[in-house]
Image (tube, rainbow, N blue to C red; front, side, top):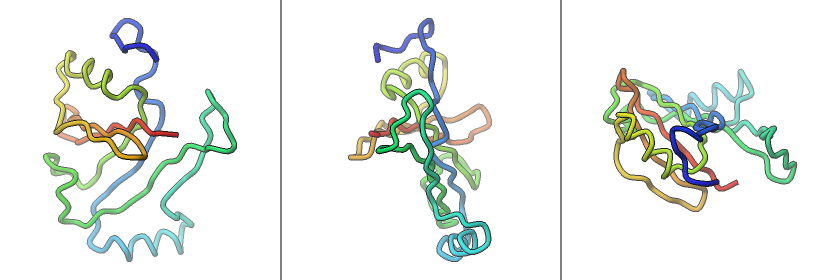
Length: 131
């Protein structure tokens, strides 16, 4: 994908990468959701732009300990993770638009992560997965 600009940017968020929330007891809440709702922590799905049965996309569902600082500086008990394309260029464009970046971009073997704050102080995790 070429460099993202305000004018040519078709896709910023390409899907929901995860739902994260604070819990008194993450292990017990995972067990409850598994038993009663059948949620095992990952939902697999296929990107309609690039259907590849051998490599489905996924959305992660994960409770965190109630005292986690992973959502900081937000004080909200939840955080959404959105899948994106070209994270580094997107962060540049968002900063130009006045969006506050939190921390630095981090890279792992499963993708790159960056964080921003919305106008109400909700921390948002942006994830460029390696599919």
